[in-house]
Amino acid sequence: MRVLASAPAKIILFGEHSVVYGKPAIAAAIDLRTYVRAEFNSNGAIKIEAKDIRVPGLTVSFSEDEIYFESDYGKAAEVLSYVRQAIELVREEAGKDKGVTVSITSQIPVGAGLGSSAAVAVATIGAVSRLFGLELTNEEIGKLGHRVELLVQGASSGIDPTVSAIGGFIHYEKGNFEHLPFMELPIVVGYTGSSGSTKELVAMVRKTYEEMPEVIDPLLVAMGKIVEKAKEFIISDLDEELRLVQLGRLMNINHGLLDALGVSTKKLSELVYAARVAGAIGAKITGAGGGGCMYALAPENQSEVATAITIAGGTPMITRISREGLRIEEVLP
Picture 1 (cartoon, rainbow, N blue to C red):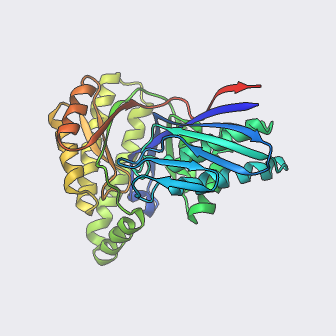
Picture 2: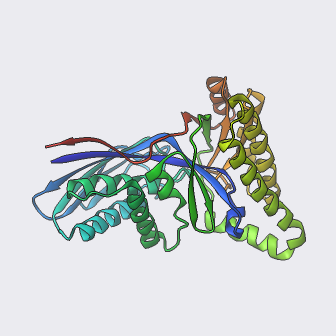
């Protein structure tokens, strides 16, 4: 028996950094996917084959216990920990210790802040749990994905695996998740080709906050208000064009506040402004900053915005919000 499952990447639409201070955030699944094929093997071992883990400039191949790097950025190897832990959790849930071989292909760049680790964990749990005959809901798989992150990382809000498992829009506040109504958002994600350290960036903002709370606190409060305003527009019955325009305005304001916190970079800002000049109605950082990605809302001109991001030195990914989270693509006897 073979099972193929897929799970999407995610972006933080609004609320990164302020969420650390108890403010809400909105995240969404995007239509870039990681695919995991799982089947039993006869030797009782866990085998992981990574076909094309996407790190720019890096080609990786795995064969049993050996890893071959053509150019070593060190990021792709981290994926192994999430996959192995996901398989072991499912074997524990099933009460069975059978050997499993998984094969991974992915459209999601590793280390770009798009939730590649959560997507591979969720897709692995989905494929392997079906292989073992477990009937788990997507919500249950999201919770197992959160457990994987806690085991591998030591800390996790659970946003990434929840979004990847359930899909669509998720409103998060102080550990609570709310699935928001779906709306189309034609977006272009721009990848700088480098990534910042989330831990270091959060610590930097914390230091500034502790030194100047009367200056930084209003920024964080404003970010929280942006999230609630965005939620109002997402769930409202307003004309779709008007909702997109208002969300774009909120994106631009949110980006300015993140820049004020010091988490943007020259390259991120260049991609953001290139996208706006090319006609995006909103553009901002997504995630911790310091590198990683930005995204632009471009309902009429995704290709023009993507070209502008390329000219500015970024890697564009034309995509949209994914209504679906985890999907079982096929089950073969």
